Image (cartoon, rainbow, N blue to C red; front, side, top):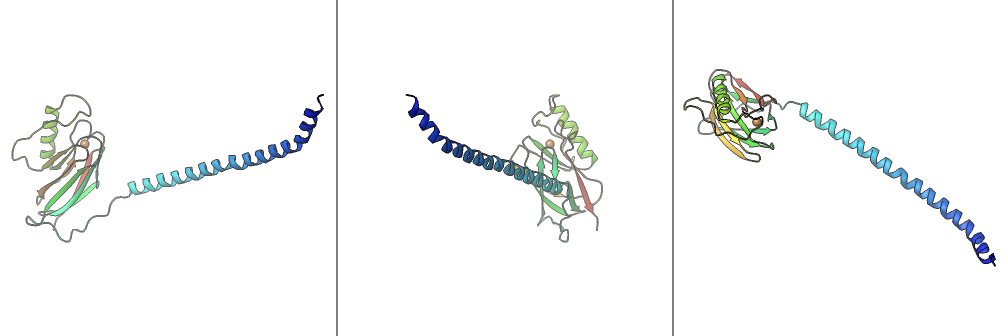
Length: 197
Ligand SMILES: [Cu+2]
């Protein structure tokens, strides 16, 4: 009575075995593939991170200063503002030339571009502190300094761009800073190298 099921089980046994072995071989072949993909992906990720770090660490070469800007033809100087740094880290200018700073806020928060000597920087630092509620990383304050302070200041929201013409003084030490609350402490200061001819 039980013979049909017995015989069918016996008949099916070799097939079942083959199928099992085949599927386990297939499973083994398939299960290795994600590991190679994962290892390859990790290697690529590390390579990209390493390349990115190398690029970030490399300082941009000084620009061509053979043709200083004039009042009629200001020399364009591009500056990107990030959270919380200026790019390039060093702005190269020629004493007495006129430049047009083309500034883009590429960050996710407001940033301020202030170029000028110590007096200019102090004036904007005080103006921002006076106008800003005492909260770290507060949004842009409606700050102002007394006329004739000198320097140049541009306040930009994320994604905004603005250009400003600036006459580089013949002497003195200039700096580039963002005085929005907490930004200077996070390293948002740029060098200004002035070539005197
Ligand atoms: Cu800033």
